[in-house]
Image (cartoon, rainbow, N blue to C red; front, side):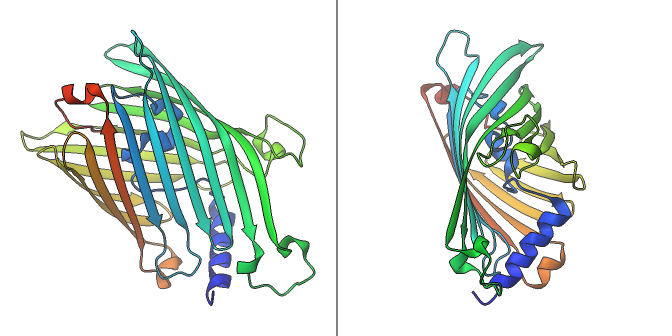
Length: 307
């Protein structure tokens, strides 16, 4: 509580500077559904992951994120449809956001790979708990009790993948509607949100029988903010251990490790080293991920999942 004013100021400053409204994670390259609904069903088995992110440690009221995702192929002769479910909870100071999305993807064979188009639809719940806020204007109704808002949303994405590389584009919030405003296809007119645009890709390079490299990149674009880029390089050892480093512009450097115990279970950890002024008050960011894959087709997979 003693630093709650600081975190509110910091969060507000980040919003003004970057207008970043979407949840952010460092291990996005191992959580494709988080970025793009077209990722659903891109494997011949069902995949799930659970991730917890504790941002800006030692900051009272700092962001804490929980993410749960499940996706898989719809059984059919053509195996060209995928379904997914994603749930996120993001807490920052006195505010909390919970998202629930259903995802659908349709795949087309294209050359040696598959091109998928996906949509996601769901709802976001926004909460402001004024009991956690220290304020001076007692007459402002904004801080009168607990405030809640529900916003239905829809997103879109495209995803192309082959055995050794992938590329995707997505608009996580293509449409959104606030019942207190007039409906519009312009998200900023129909709600307090703005559209974010993601462009990303990665490639697997085999160095020898024991080592493989996976460079990847993610570009985030928002018209009202500077372009932000994530550049990552992961080294895979004996198809079991991932060791990675990364850099997120305007934010942090990242180190990560993932252990794929077998064809089903994997666990990952990432640590963000903040590069902004927040580092004066924070001990960095911790992110833990657990993944589990299941399905009868999994036993036929001879290579680990690269993405």
